[in-house]
Image (cartoon, rainbow, N blue to C red):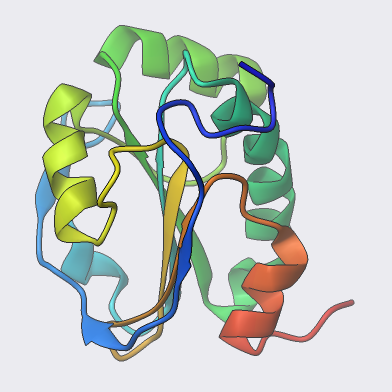
Length: 155
């Protein structure tokens, strides 16, 4: 499998405005986090796994964007389809600066609720500050697309 290809299935783009499903998941320290914590922000919800090459490829750009646009209410949230220890180790090595929630394999069901019909990774959902899904992306998500969809200014 090529590094740029989704880990499980073909890529698709769907643009809609639907209310995001609610969920709660533990973070890397075991604290339960609820999606509502980030209401009022532009959210990039990224379903990923440590064993997924394209997931690992897009994370450095997400780290950079999280740092650059934090003050403009851009919030990345990782949903790891992986075990907690693998996620903790990888997050430490990469310096992930945004919440990584541990869903293990149950995360595939959550991804399906968010519109991932194929179970492919990476899968990202962009949610506006009102909680509406404005875009879904199977496969690599480009930073410029994130900025365009959220209306955030480039530096």
